[in-house]
Amino acid sequence: MKDSGTAARFAESLGMLLQEEGGLVKENYYPYDGPGRAPSGHSYYYFRPDTPTLFHILDCDEYWAYHAGGDLEVWSVDPDGNLEIRKLGTSEGAEPCLYFRKGVAFAAKPCGPKREGTLTSLITVPRFSGSGLKLLEPEEVIRLCPAVRAFFETGPAEKNRNGNNP
Image (tube, rainbow, N blue to C red; front, side):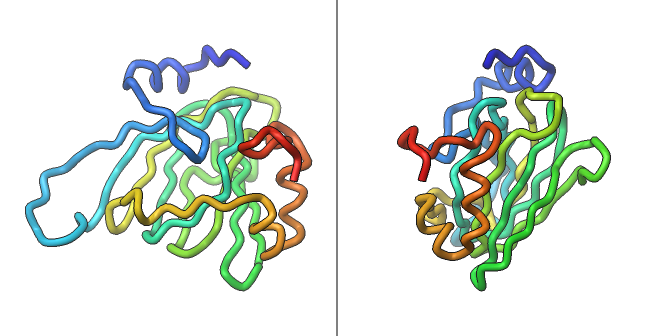
């Protein structure tokens, strides 16, 4: 699906790079000379209109702030298997900002009538580290919460990273 909306044009102008979990990212760097990881980090993230993200877990807290484009349906599963489905965006019932605690599995896919990409800011506390990212296979998430199977069976999220339904 070709996306010519504002979010896609902005993502292109930033020279964003493809991420393993499914979207495009441009990390912003801030000077930090202290020990260990920086206390926080910020990235622009573009969710493609035809590709859901993979379920993943981070070792940091993450805030998502909506900027432009279509709404996202965001599924999260806590370590006890409790499912929460929220919407990021500006339409009715959507929120402009979402928060995810470290250790929670989450993924997103486009939703609603406006099937275009979505531009967000991702703020992590502490700063994101690639070594703190754990990608999950669909079967892992479904074992934790069987209701998550619907994420993989509906809408643009019909395929996992191998192009197959779980």
